[in-house]
Length: 111
Ligand SMILES: C[C@H](O)[C@H](O)[C@H]1CNC2=NC(N)=NC(=O)C2=N1
Image 1 (cartoon, rainbow, N blue to C red):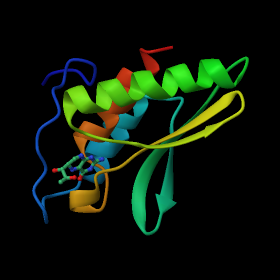
Image 2 (image 1 turned 45 degrees about the horizontal axis):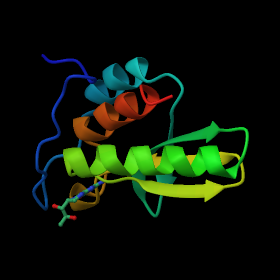
Image 3 (image 1 turned 60 degrees about the horizontal axis):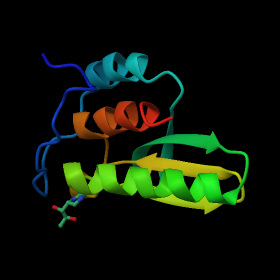
């Protein structure tokens, strides 16, 4: 099984399967700085990154955006002065997929 950091996001089909509780537990151990929260009924990975100022936070937002485009898997990003909230979930399946954990690991690698 490829690691989260080397996993290439796969296209998710509407109605596809969310990760099992066992898979989530396994993947979550690999991204310990993230929490699993409920966003509008969907399990979502969340982490807040902090920066010295707005400009550094904006640069990070753009780097995550480039990563998302490269993988064609997209986050929700909340940009504030010195902080970026990153949320990963898979809209198509209304929950968490290996793609989300992989993108969380790749997001961590950006800082
Ligand atoms: C049309 C649909 O948005 C695309 O198939 C992709 C784009 N990026 C995506 N990103 C995320 N996080 N979830 C999706 O379901 C998703 N779908």
